[in-house]
Image: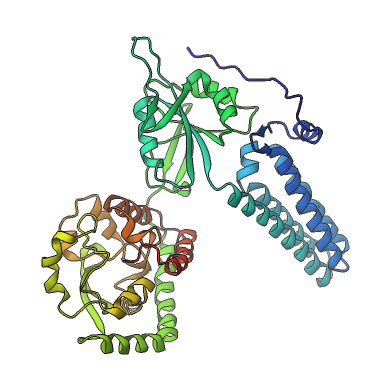
Length: 477
C-alpha cells in the first residue's frame, strides 16, 4: 500500500505580504513564477478600486448603490476565501456569484423600497463596471498563461491513451508522468511514455507536482490504481493549489451533459441524451431562416458582382450546382460560386494520384482546375455565399457538419453515419478548426462532437470563430 506525506515545510524567504495572504486564504501556495496568492489579492484590489472609482463618477450613488457595492465586494471576497485555490485562479465562479448577489440586491432594492431611478441606474453602472474589471483581469490572466501544465498519474496503458489524446492539444502541456506501477517482478520501469518523461512513481506525486509547478494532477483509472490511492492523493494535495482530477471514459460529451450522482456510495456519471431540446431545435430552425434571409438581402450586391467576375474569368455558369448528402442521407442540390473550370469533374480521375485529402475527401493545394478568380473566392470563403439559399430552403443550416458528397457517404460506417443525423452547415467545428489541414479521423471526431453537443453557447462560439478563420484563411484550399 502506497503512503503519501504532505510537505509542511515553511519557506522562510517568502515575502511578508504572501505570508499574510496565506493566513487569510488557506490553501494558497507559490509556484516557480511568483505568488499566486498575491495575484488573487491584486485581483480583488482592482475590483474594489474600480467599484470605488465608478461610484465616485456617478453622483449620487445613494443608499441602494452603497449597499449593492458593499454586497458585491463582500460576496467576491467570501468566494475567494472559501473556494479551492485552483478554482479561484482559473474559474469565473467568484465573479459570477458576486454578480448574482449584486443583481438580487438591485432587484430587492427596486421591489421593496421606493428607490429613485437615478440611484438604481447608478448602482447598475457600478456593478457593471466592477464586473467588467474582474472579467478583464481573468482574461488577461488566461492570456498570459493559456496552457494548462498537467502531471499524469496511472499505469502505462491508461497514461498512453491520455497522451495520445492530449498530445496535439495546444492548451495542454504534459509536464511528466508518475507511473502507478511497481518493479516487483524485476522489470525496470520505463523512462518515457510516448516521448513524455516518467518523473516518478505514485508516491512521488505530491513532491513532483510542487517541484514542477503543475496546475493539475490527472489520474488515469486502471487496474493498478485504486480508489483509495486517489483519496490519499487528495489528502496529500489538499494544502496546495494543484487541482486533482480523475479522467473519465466519457468521450464527446460537454460538461453540461454529464451529471455526477451517488448510488450506493459509488460516484456515477449520468450522461444526458444527445438530442437537443425541442425549444433549442425550434430556435435554431427560426434563426436559420431569418438570418439567411437577412444576409441574402445584405450580400445580394456582392453576390451579383462575384457572379459577373466568375463569368468573365472563364467560360461556364457563375453558380456551381452539386449533389450533396443532407440530413438522414437525403440528397439535395448545393449552390456555390464556381471556382473551377467547367470540365473540372471529368478531370478529377486524372488527378486521383495527386489527392492530398484525408479519407474519402479529394483535396489539392494547387489544383490546376481552379481558376484565378476561384483561388481568391476559396481563400476568402466567398464562394460559399450562395449556400444561404440552401439554408433558406431548409436543406442546410448556418452551423453544422460539412456537407458530404453522396459517393463519400457510401464509405461511411455506422459510426461516421452519425454526422448525417443533423443538417449540414455552412460553417462548423471542422471549418473553424483547420479544414484541409485536419486528418480525416480528426474531422469526423469534430463533426460527431458537434452533433452530440448542440448548445446555444456552442453555436455562438462557432459563429465567432468562423469570422477569425475566414480572416486568417485558416485551412483554406
